[in-house]
Amino acid sequence: MKKTMWNLMLATTLIGAICGCGKKGPATSSTAPATSSSKATPIIAVSVLTMNNPFFKEIVDSMEAEAKKSGFELLAVSGDFDVARQQNQIKDFIVKKVSAIVLCPCDSKAIGPAIQEANAAGIPVFTADIACTAAGAKVVSHVATDNYLGGRMAAKAMVEALGGRGKVAILDFPEVESVLLRTKGFQEKLAELNKAADCDITVVTILPGGGDKAKSFKVTQDIIQAHADLAGIFAINDPSALGAVAALENAGKLKQVKIVGFDGQPEGKKAIAAGKIYADPVQFPDQIGAETVKLIVKYMNGEDCPAEYLIPTALYRQADAAADAAK
Image (cartoon, rainbow, N blue to C red; front, side, top):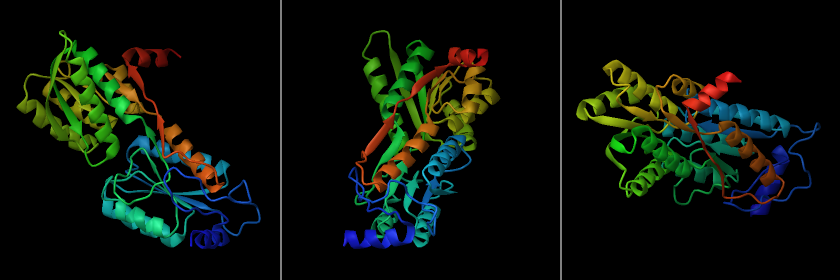
């Protein structure tokens, strides 16, 4: 059955795949996905969480550059934080008979049935940045930041920023697996560090900021009203951190409350340089995009693909911003 489906896809796009987690792709007789005599260029279809966040735009741009090198066309759309919209986009990809699908899921669990539809159609699915955690949904490879270790790095930065003492809030986005890993790493590292006599940091509230600047602005306003003695905020991405910055500036509390963000996007780095954000564990979205396409090409050529490919973060402080400015 699988071999028959594969032959059908070859006839259409010269390349196809049968989805399987961390397994070899189907062997092909060609090392390239397309030739000049191809009737149609094979398509990698991508649906990201949002195009309004520069992080995801950079993932798409790097995927497009890498896809072009390998003879693929990239079709990229935005899920706009709407899982129903993203599900419909996947249905459209299936109708178009694309060669591979890449997702940054709007909801790590709710996206499962749509992925299963792609599985049934014989189209390999990959995830980038945000994993799918739905039972029964088959993903070939997941490429992402090591978000758990990044969260632990953020906790160390928070302890450093606060001198080991203070009350902290978390601006969360629990619908996506990458954020769950960040907050888990942050809280577990804090618990470890709090065992030392000179460290006593308490997480007093965890509220959803939606990974969005405007929503995080409003949530931060609520947090500082409820916790007048708040000392720090861990924001799960740069838009959240920038929303917190705006709320604290508006309340005249930016010097009182230290912010640790996550991403290291240009606006975030600019705020770090200005001393408005203490630090960011920096992600490398260009690597996420490029490595995802490289794994797709490997899979198409019948090579082994890892179930997970993680990229470490690097902590970015004001001193790093100063070094960048001096270059």
